[in-house]
Length: 342
Image 1 (cartoon, rainbow, N blue to C red):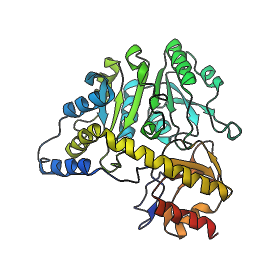
Image 2: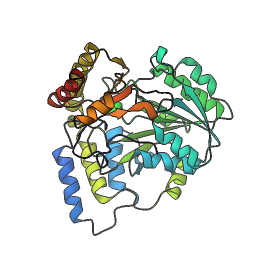
Image 3: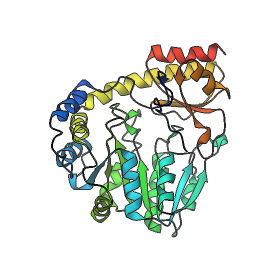
Image 4: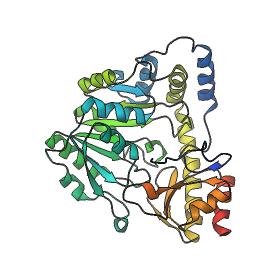
């Protein structure tokens, strides 16, 4: 079984660096909106998430009819794949496991583009050559998970145009885009209203630290595809507390801006301390750091009550690669001490 981050149920009473959530925690207004919604949860939630989609529409400046909501981004990945039922898909490696898991569930043939350590695990220009008329779907995570490596805007556009030429659907996962220094520069959102070959995945989960509430959303101009997705999803998949929390989060843009600055400063501090200790850092443009360290570092951390993400079970990675969330200074110092005590 593929082990994800955030498994505090197997590893109890640990300081969790394995889940990439905003260390500032859930904003109070988001928390309060979810709590108040519990009192109304004797009623079914709106299956069409109308108020939520309107709030996202204002935030993203995308028509509400081009927005679909789900029980986290992972739910939308599976729903999209069931709706489209691709026969052949292209994935980078390493990348987020749920793409593969969803594709395998519909017996899709998967082509992999292995990103090389020597090139910093980046997508290169020849990625576009792997997209052929036989390719039905391409998944791309930007910034990538687990590496935090960014695909440059010019290459993103060339990939999109290649998908248009070949008739493939490009699925871009931007769930960590809000943490970037220049989020708009690296987003493909500007292409949404000109093509049916693009599906953009986003979530409130990471920035607003609401992983347990489960709320993701997709942006796409293709109304027929969105209609097929609705047919493939269960009714009431987004709970009332999640919908109300999402409405509050969509309106709280200042929280995201302040968080971005604080996380960037702490990320730079933590990355530099890791380099001083001999770790090789790759990418790490979002709220997590991807690095090669001692092969026993995962076990040493666990012995000290700290859970990090061992990335050796990602396709294309080996033992010694890790991903850690950027947390508060006090917590980051606790992690660094484990490395000093080796």
